[in-house]
Length: 345
Figure 1 (tube, rainbow, N blue to C red):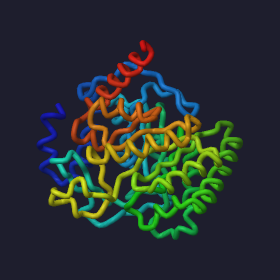
Figure 2: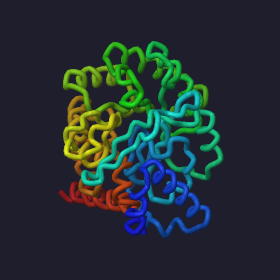
Figure 3: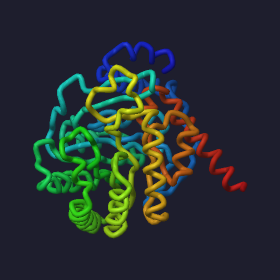
């Protein structure tokens, strides 16, 4: 069905098509027709950071920023769903247009800028949803909060979502909030993560259940910067790392007329860079921190390559736009074959 709908959707503005697709999926779910859209994959149980995932293929943050469509997205067979990025206060994000399709490259450039309804709206939506699967909540800071007070925004979100999340992702790697990536600098990151880790442990003690905390990093970091980040994360005891966010390097799509648009590049051209960052981080942490591979997965073999590079789990987003819901099944099936082959060997 998606193969039929995609040419129609691609005639629309990308952000309009995004909203229309999610609305249609929610209507299908409420009407009982969603099972026609995607065949649910057989379970492929996977454990990471103390959580059992029914399968290792998740939805990356950014597609459902406010958890408006949790129940509908759950029908597509994901092993876990990550919502957000959410900020303490609602914000509109950057001016439109702010999302661009580079169809010849199976890529997207976005400069959305953490547009979301605020943490209270997200929590309300999570509470109303019937979804009881593994839920990640991705947290960020408001655009007008200076970096020296950024940790306060993350603490507000962490404390508010902790009870409702299976795990929490700290996003300091989006290129679309000015100065945000500066928080990845070693000394700043050490103070920042230490503060959040203390709050995480306190909340786990108060609520009787500890929730894992993950950090999402950028793909545009130098080797020395990645060395420093790995050292900080090992020292502070972070539970997991997501490799990686979108890239600000558009050289791989320079022949596309939209390549000059500001924003983060995702989709197929990101695959090699994001996978290299993943492999490098895997070598640095030596199995002590579980890794999530994201960036450029458009078929099952890409998902398997992420596992070979060191990922315990993978996430998809842009590939879903180009390939549709069948991509979830394809990735799970390929990862199943990969696991069976490794066991047989």
